Length: 197
Image (cartoon, rainbow, N blue to C red):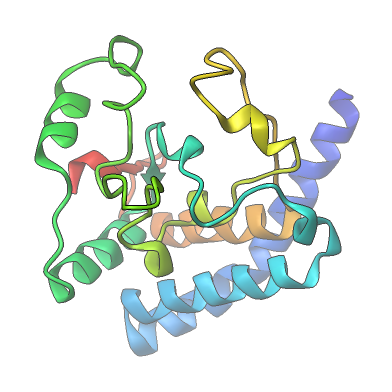
């Protein structure tokens, strides 16, 4: 198992190294927002090509995994801030404050919800208010488990096993590597939690 993990990390790093110069060229020519849109489009193309990911139990209206700390790169955070500004949207102030001030473990399930997750609509669904601009961690999160396990009321302690693609992980890693080149990080990458937008 450890050998497989190491080989996967090696493959991710190798693929990420191919993306970095492409990302740098787009960033230099068009800026961060165009780069992030390009990255999101590339991820979507990859996910669309994979048959495995067409069998996913995840749907746009499911919000189970939105009840966790959503982290993103600094360039993604800038992009999301711009989307919020353009669409006159804000994060939920109560959830943002709670998540900034209290440990995640002390918050109930609803208080842990992403500050950009809308309240229930008339159909009882909670939708992402920036779904088309959601961060990489959200767009690459996938579960193949039975959707019934995403019912927090019936399965309050169930941990959902997720599946990720090597290619999309490489894109995420390449973006962080570019941010390091641009001096946006110190030695250790710094991610921005959604509740700090």
